[in-house]
Image (spheres, helix red, strand yellow):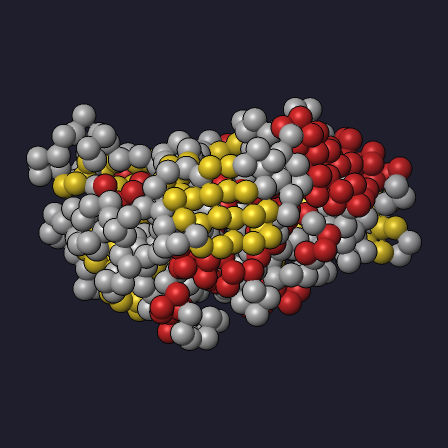
Length: 542
């Protein structure tokens, strides 16, 4: 889950999506053309960079990696379409066998042919316990994968796993390169070879990643020949660089994106997301592990005020990992802002106000620290608002900023302002976030949440392809989170991108997808940069 924007390619609950780690950019425009540069070059400003570029360690597991392709990919509406596969898979009647015919003539960027052996190598390596891939449990249903000749791959499942096809957007690595070195530390992790539309030409850690169009890409050579991702941690610096022309596009928080509204040469794009902000309430803390405290904080927080004041309307209240407009959202699990109700819960549970207004029970003060990522203004603002709301109910929260290196060792007992979210199937949202057996597994289940009813429902939802049974299972999960919330979910956040109005596509204007928590690197209007064309280049703009 969220705090997965960190030091290693951790599983997205997402998400989707790439795991990220914060790094500042000393001179993001250096060596790369900005909005005044060549028409076939683009520079975008992002907030984070990946820790690895190896699909075997988690990069590109949710598709859209630019360097690699999966068997399938998502279109703008998150519908599956063929990529390295020639067509969508053939699925057996019992839902246990998926057969993929591969696209002919595809080559890796080093000129070697792509075959079924590369697919088998990728999936088997990800499932190998020796591989440092925290997303392994996402492929728990996979029993076996085998090649039938060079052009066919057959997956066999242990149980019917309804969203398995969505898992096959996983980026494919070349066996002839990655299979000849240490999977966890070899050069492939920073110097990848893939089948994608772009080839990595340079990676200055903490500064930028540069890509060159792959002229032999099976989908056609991209018109944007050079693509640079400038890594700029600070939101204000990113906005300044965009305004100065060092960048062609950037992801920005709402207050800074608003500053470009009057700029006729730029357009703002909003992407709806599964990206949430939440507060972890660790089970192993005497205060946050108390169910009454958890329920009271769920009512004390004013989510709508956060949407209005912090997000400036670019988002919506969150009551769990599933957005309220998702078909999987359990109606009736919305929590109202009810300060009186929060106080009543605490009173009845024996948490009585002390002389300073902070509640006490059995000699324990209702107080705990709340960490947020240094330099992340949105997390800071959410943390401060949450602490303010909690204090009105008699709970004292001390907000503290830190790097993930500082925060991670404290996660078992200290609360964290985290983020997460993965579009698509509810299994993607909830399993890594809530499964008790994953507590302490990196950034999975950061709150060490332990609810047997939730564990059972997560397994039931994962191990059947019956739609009614799955809906019942995920409804159970969401209703259990009302009874005993191990997290206080705050908001789902829209992602805002400001882009120089220099490009179009054959289909018309640039677009965004519904996005996961991780964003900027493979999301945003450049999710399909390989389809961009400079305006005035003869593209059939509509």
